[in-house]
Amino acid sequence: MPGLHEDECLSLAAAGRLPEEEAECLMGKYELGRLLGRGAFGKVYHAREIRTGQSVAIKAVCKQKVVKGGFTAHVKREVSIMRRLRHPNVLRLSEVLATRSKIYFVMEFAKGGELFARVAKGRFSEDLCRRYFHQLISAVGHCHSRGVFHRDLKPENLLLDDNWDLKVSDFGLSAVREQIRPDDGLLHTLCGTPAYVAPEILAKKGYDGAKVDIWSCGIILFVLSAGYLPFNDHNLMVMYRKIYQGQFRCPRWTSPELQHFLSRLLDTKPTTRITIDEMHHDPWFRRGYDETKFRHHNVDFETKPMLEAADGEAKCLNAFDIISFSSGFDLSGLLNDRLDGKVEADRFVSAEKPEVILKTVEEAAEEAGLRVEPGKGWGVRLEGQGGNFVAGVGIDRLTEELVVVEVKRREVEAESGRCLWKDKLRPKLLALIYQPDPPVPGG
Ligand code: ATP
Ligand code: MG
Image 1 (cartoon, helix red, strand yellow):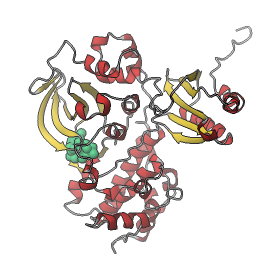
Image 2 (image 1 turned 30 degrees about the horizontal axis):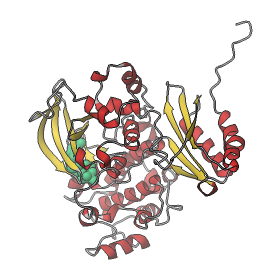
Image 3 (image 1 turned 180 degrees about the horizontal axis):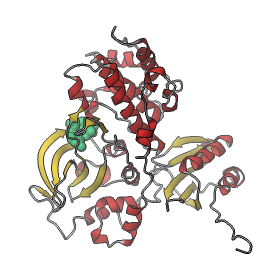
Image 4 (image 1 turned 135 degrees about the horizontal axis):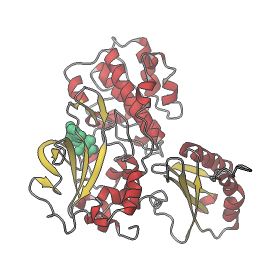
């Protein structure tokens, strides 16, 4: 399987079994219904799963628009992680199907439509704002803790289910989006409003996905309580300037606690912007926040799809299974394809939590003077010595207790680069290696 070209993988699901696209039936599994909406890259339809009769939403993206005509390893990796996200306020992506011309993202159907359609009828009370904001932060925090960032939190992606609970959609799809060419290069400036975009993105600086999402959450909270955008102007440049300067004024009905909280969210400096952990100490946020309500949903990584895909017959796999499986150890996305030349890889099994492993890696790298950049999912990219040392570290779950850590390094000419790995990084990582308990003497 890993030997297959990604495009071959994607078309496998369709190959030989089904017509390219039947008028209203997708791969014999879903009956396509009405158009729910249109995004920059495709249309979203209501559909019914034929086997269960359940409603789903299907986003269809034209493959032609996907750069290089196929999913890159980077996207595959992100999608496989996304599929493992489970949270009551994160819209579940259940499968990805592909025909020769299109990619279909099958997701939970959000019956209540867009949250902002409700705000349009009138701004929310602070209590209602808080209720939705708690759900939003719980969803965002869950995804962040699994290394998935949204980077495009905006009204169209805040949907409601039939209980009027929040469902955040398109989580992790930003990587897919980055691979897709919009019809028109200007599209983002013309249609996409920068109103939700953090100042550091506008400044085209490197940015931290978590901080960027928090900024967008701040804008969302402002809109829920005020009924209008904090930074707005028909002149885009003026709007940009307001965002850069963090110039906004709360309406007079806003409580002082909420005003203070908003100023912490909409802090233009990412380094001082409030973090999710800090929110728990904020008087406005803290009220009525019940963490335990969300906790039991935090089901960890699923190992099944990956392993099933490995065992199953190719024709039984859909594109998603193949994506989940084949992206397992593929770090090329993490390394950004910038690693030309020979790459050396080290792999080991660890019983530590991914967070602990990443923290160890980051600390060791920082100590060694390397720059650490977040990769997609559970991974980081390390770089230093004027480009002489480049490595990617990725983590994948093996069993419930164990993960595989893979470190890929560009083979370097410079002796200093080799020493850095051998003397500084490797010894720290060795401590993470899983060692089965020694047999009990006499046992
Ligand atoms: P982008 O193309 O940047 O993702 P977008 O989020 O507006 O922008 P889509 O994700 O394609 O675009 O969604 C288009 C519209 O379809 C949304 O605005 C929403 O109203 C509707 N929609 C999307 N997903 C669902 C869903 N799972 N259930 C119900 N409606 C949905
Ligand atoms: Mg969307």
